[in-house]
Image 1 (cartoon, rainbow, N blue to C red):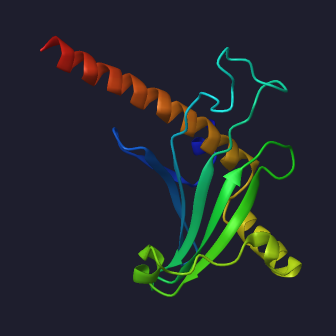
Image 2 (image 1 turned 45 degrees about the horizontal axis):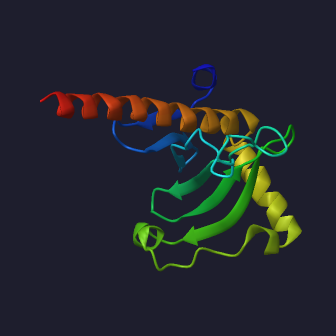
Length: 166
């Protein structure tokens, strides 16, 4: 809640839907950050529940899209990561000329971020910082991914209970 109070992002979610997003306008572009709920359970933990090497951190995958009114834009496919300085890593950068191209499952997803020229990588990092991608945003994404999972699980339990009692 503190993040939303100090940010110009609007948080959008629907009950029963695993998807969530933040959105805001920056200049003539719509900035949209999308992600899904994540399980609080570590899939790599062994049967007794022991976790090797201490507490494992589960990254949250998210997508940041900057889209102009014409429908053209760019999407950054990212994951949160632990650390003080850089709380996210970029996997791919996809550009699109239209909404149809953006939504097409067969359109080119762009190169791996690490394969892009370093100067262009720095420019992309600066662009993301300008539109509000920072450590606080990543903290919010991670927290809401777990919180949403818990809320949906409780909703699921209530639905199952109602069905079982009838």
